[in-house]
Image 1 (cartoon, helix red, strand yellow):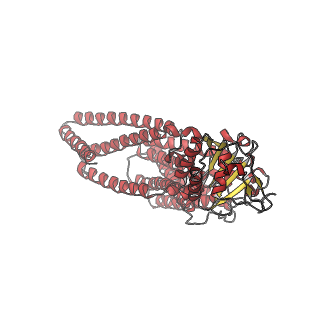
Image 2 (image 1 turned 90 degrees about the vertical axis):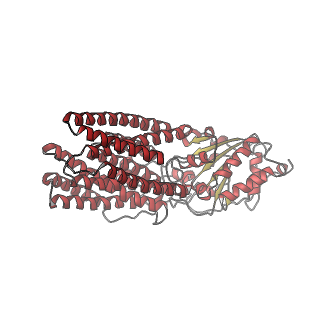
Image 3 (image 1 turned 60 degrees about the vertical axis):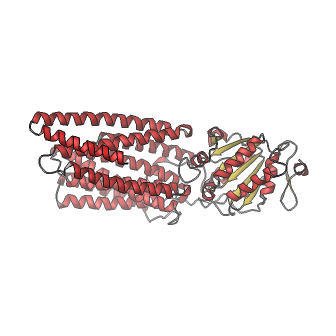
Length: 543
């Protein structure tokens, strides 16, 4: 950090010295300006290329770490260029409108120190279960920054006239509008994810007409803002629009059910990118425009993919009109009689199995069970079992949540498969362990009229045996009963997922070990007694 500060001070003093030398002649000032612009452009190109390569690397778990490194490097270059430009501008100023380079460096340093300390504190203190809401809040900060920059850009007299001024005012208005919607919407999404407010949709009367009215009024205010251009009327138009946009962001997200928050976070991430792009237009910063466009377009595409995975309309998502229908629970939604098993019985079932698939959900994150799950995977593979993972696109509370947890626990990437890769293979699986998942394995999604009708799910019920790890028999985040729990081939292992997995590992490693004979569907299948409890063949205990 001290080396970085020394470097920025050196840049400031070098720029100031160059400015003093050049002040005697206009040609020297022009040369300094040309040199500054050339260096900044080179840095912008390098940073933009690094951001593009970062996105490409982040698309795969195997290269995600390299993607983070590329992104951080690009951002570091961008920050250095911003500092260099600010100090060079201050050094060239002879009118007294700008602060000196030393004051500029001090203010930038203070801002970076405060922001950096807050970011490090939040990143180090957040639990993995709190990562989704942290991302939502960070999206909100981008939106809030766009609002502040919009107001500041309007206050500054850029010397623009005619069409150029009208275009700039349009940038200010749209950037502030998108930023305000992003800020309030992200805050609501974060609060829902953190369960600080109820996850159920809050529907105001005539909400669609209300949203449409806000958009129409905002367009009228933008026209007035551009025509007036300055003065109290323009300030009133900008202020009223900001208030309406804040309300619109709140209203769009509050009307969406908590189970759909992963898509909302992705949408807000896209909004934050477009807010950043408009901020770049306001500041005439090409790198910010490029970065914002990259984030906005990639976030929109990710949201589109997730909407397909949840059978949602992308346009409905943009308008805040999904996840709000109550629906009618179809046949199979009624509670039935479930069968409970112990960790010991589950271990016996795994000893008999040849193929095992694990389908994790948010419950695994809550109980921090990813490390025991990774150890269970190693134990079973050492015993000759074929172990894979089936990941639903929206499992958890943000895109890729389960992939992050499993990578953190060092589960090999080639074992972690997406839903489309495994959904046709469940009939060949001996045992499926559903750890903390609910809505993503709910067969009621295939029944018309259900609240989650049409949502693609993992067809775990087609496997020979299913063991569901769950704290209780309560419904999932979508509030829908799961008929899977009452199927004849399903057992419930109730309790803390981490403790349950650890107990299974102990059973597998004690005495007989994890090696096992025939698969359950190959002559050694388990059965149930009159009470419905699973009966494991005695041969298993004799191994």
